[in-house]
Length: 578
Image 1 (cartoon, rainbow, N blue to C red):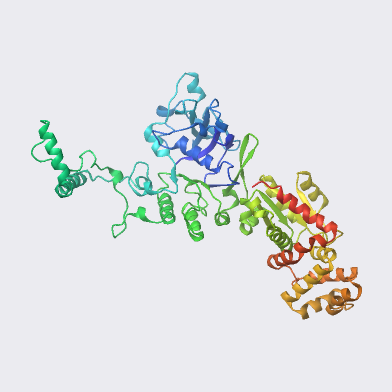
Image 2 (tube, rainbow, N blue to C red):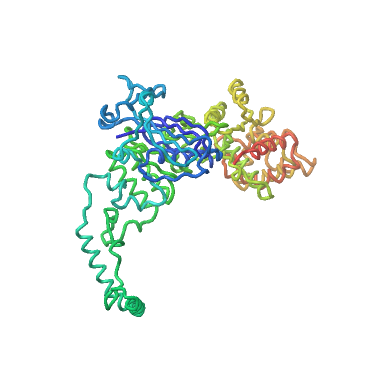
């Protein structure tokens, strides 16, 4: 059945112009709020939906500019023989070149035969649908799809209100499962007559006084209504159609009484069963009403894991669970650059796919801080918690997410940041300086506007902290390390780092004798703290607690160079756009 090959939107709501070639399977749209995700779903629905009445207002025009018409075109491929019929749509069939994305007005042998349906809305707010063809226009000919073909091509929309699809109404998923149609006209007509009669008998008891007054008034006025006026159900009001028939459970309870999530999940399963008849699905806010495990089942029903997609789904989401369940080629970031909108495929590069699995929330934020390791993530989180508790805006409120690169290759943070940058995300990198990245890799990232914060003088984060904090700050760090790991292990690490030249007790007594820690002891503490496989603060949770309780409060007393680096990080965060 049909697949959308190309979408072109002009002057519709927040979208000035957009051209997009969607994939034939799941197209999950992500991006910041008001980026146009829902408008794309609505544009497809309005253009292809089988509606006889569709209302527009001035607010549907880009920047309320009603002098620039709304123009939505959808090119449809994988057509059945009826839609490719030269007798029916001969002058309107076109060709689509998938390698270039170009729609040719003349169908050709080696490219796909397609139809392009256009929706235009001008100042009169009246929608007009027509098939696009230069050949037909040259002959002053125009036509729309037949109503039957419109119904067959119409996408199924799964929204917050889903009762429609649980009855045999025109265009519902139940009508697409098979050719069977309910015909209860005789039974329903009989039921209607019986209901009218039964109500008439009851009405005499309930409305006797009113009926007597009406009968008296009619008699006085010479209106022939007989001696007794009855209250009965209006014959014109008691009518039934196929749409009156809906699904019920074994106890006769209507399925529309199910919860929103259960209803949407059921409809997704029915859509999968009806894929041969209806292949295009529109779902805004996929996660609405669904728990995480049901989101996974919902996506499975849409064919998320199938190599040959049974459905072409256009979905929006803000759910990290959905992102983790989908692959990068099913995810598309919606971006507005000036007057032009873009839909960018996330892709399946290793750096991107692994980040989706570990940090899906990063793809749902406008700005991303790529941290070399868990310690940097904990540092930023902890200082942010300290400052937000003292009246500053939290980075989560500013739309900033943190990504842990897991250490290792010093170029990795820049590869990951470049992947985010290519998708329009604002990105920064925080790195250690003990292992330097490739100079060209870092410079390329900086030239594209990326911020890099590196600790000073060849230091890792632990080196920087023990070298930069005040005496009280260093003492607090040592005390917290003992709480985390015990005094014996901390002492062993110090002895190993100093080659038995110093121990824990000796370092702790230095401020009592000299009023401070020596530079040598600070260096030893930094080395000891990052002992492999047993680092004192080598986790997000541990460093977060240290940063919140010790580093944040000590910043005003810390080395000015280190304080400047931290301030640079948070200045970048504060400039984020939510």
